[in-house]
Picture 1 (tube, rainbow, N blue to C red):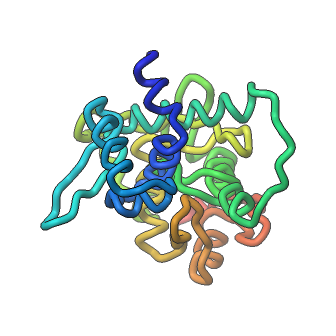
Picture 2 (cartoon, one colour; picture 1 turned 45 degrees about the vertical axis):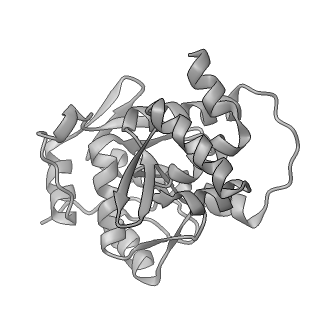
Length: 237
């Protein structure tokens, strides 16, 4: 624990890990720029984190791409953010436009978080599609039909025995959004439909014009306020 804490506790490494929590693979140069350090210094940091298996690296042609090594590491990092948000005495810091964008909607490794992620979870819970609580989560039979129609792959046979559906306590909303395979599939499908686009150099996502319509039609969300408008999901055929 001391070794991992020391690795994550460095400001530059923490910044790199936070950037990789967006779910995308980034090069060493990109991570060096985001962390505000030189490329050689970034290489030293990245080597230590690869050795500790916090991140993994893939070589493609002359580039090396880094990513969070596993959902377990991502869960640890998100839990640390949650502890910092809930347990550590807060200092007053005025919110920037970037902070507000992250709170509105962001990627949490491979699933959606922020007001957007929580609103989708609330919608699916309200219509009986998903059961979510402190001890775990699952998709109901009715929910399987709705999500499959939406384009989500719900096969329970997954590589690495990944958790099917689990709650993830949102550090900014302090309520649950959906993680695990189901959460990752919902994010994948929203991105595939171009309902959401990533904001450069941040984990934030923006709702597109198509997304405003799609989120309203599929999940009953007002994309501007991200408030639930019952019925949350239309379950009819």
